[in-house]
Length: 258
Length: 327
Image (cartoon, rainbow over all chains, first blue to last red; front, top):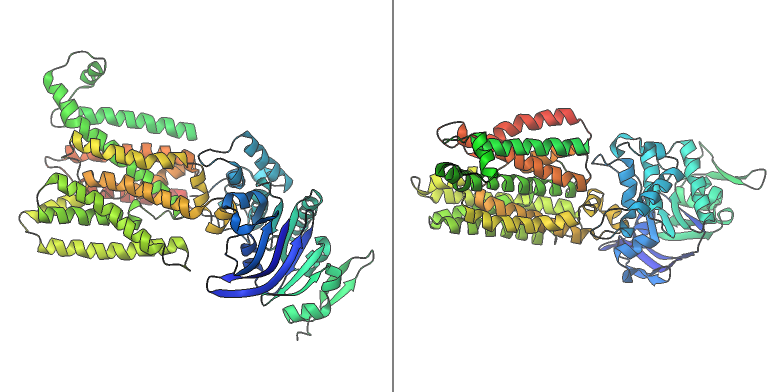
């Protein structure tokens, strides 16, 4: 579904990452871990065609990315950016409806199908009760859920989420992770980034460890999330503990910062 | 709320139009207006006043108000900033420079209008060409900054021409133009400006829903499937065409493009499809009210540029206090 080969990426005139390769199939979940400034957001923006790749190949559902227009990309891939600073007081419903852009004709307004899709998206992240509220007057966690709902209204085959749990409380974090797992089960490919390696353990099939723009390791979370890789990425000492039932969790060793 | 706002604005506009036709140096009674509408015979003087004197002027006020409000609404959405007016990319300054230059060179009214229109288009063209070449910056910021900088440059050219102008002959004409006026509007002016303004309005109406996407951060709008560069270019062309065509016949009239979009947004929210028609109604009503005051307040004509600011400033502050943060 999503195929990335030998990708180098960055901003115009400044390459910040190179040699990134991975594929993501239908229903698979991949978690990108890495330190601040490691290139996660830039990688995502490049994969979505928002930044031009500096080299390598990106394919969305077989089609090379540069051959696709904005509308065609939007029908394939949805994007949940990291936080959204709302300026105008659109209602949450109007905001989520904007997710339908790629399905609405250039001169048209959203129709019945679009409204139905928006309502489904609102309900599926549990914010149907906020539909009438202005996006400027809800909490940042609720706004994050609205962003997820907007991307779902897009009905994409691939969902790219940039730190979708960053501003959420514990309950909402778990809800978003659950939602991502459910979406993956319905066949959507999911690429997300997180600052919490436990999120990779919880819902990812594979983890991609990105440091200084290069892939440190890529593979099943249990194989690549190890004390040594975490120390290399974050510069802190971490234990990876097996839990009863086969799960794993990361436990930082406070007071032993390297 | 939406329906009530539209109804109230339409009724207010109708009442204002009736008032505008009725009041003035030669008062026309409401019953005379009604009989004229019904096709009954009225005194010839009444007919002349209504059709020749007040008709073009009322229509011009409606056109100017609606066009400036529409352009302001589009720009505030696109620039994600409610302090933006249609002048942000230099259209008014360019038009002013064109007009001042024409007045400096001749006394031809037609030439002044043509120069003003061309000046407005040229200024925005220059700003857009330079601003969109400043890569590696936020495209909107680059446009605004270029607009401000080039606007200042054009402003100093206007200042220079004012210094060089003949203080008895040309300078009053220049000052008069810069404050705006609908006093000398002829049917021919209307015939020239209205189609151009309408040409600017049509794409805005067609893209009325999609315009909302421009209020999102650039990345988000693009990820949702909008070619933001192209849509922004459409908006700039439309808003410029609308502003330049009316400014060419009215001179500089401030505040409407800044204030009216706020008022409309306060009433119906930010959705462009609902916002644009209401802003145009309110803009037309505000301009007509101001212009009617301009010609009835005193024995001399008060320039609308003065009155819009006099009324606009307190109104703006009141709206700002009222809205808190929900625009």
